[in-house]
Image (tube, rainbow, N blue to C red; front, side, top):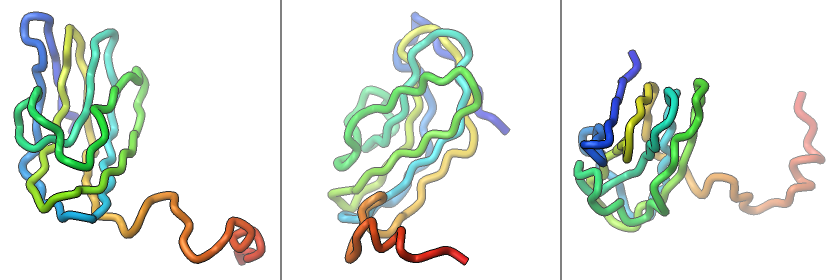
Length: 130
């Protein structure tokens, strides 16, 4: 079931937070989110050091990610933790608006996403798929 978040101008940074997630220094994680924003409003996602919407992001998360799509969308973000820590996935609203959030997952991934190691792009083209 979707999580429904409604923000209003009198409560800047209203939001929701996950329970704590253990992350390991040097490990890369994938954050996947399905969502749909209704009308206006400014919504963001981040991986924080605690459940405070205005608190610090976890070291290794680059910046808060805007959630702007008004149609059903899945976004995927990657981050590499630089510390052994407890992380929290946060969704927050800056002004009036509403959003539906579903299918939130954080998964450990091996290596650097999108980085080719020990090969060239041509190697991939030369190997036909049967």
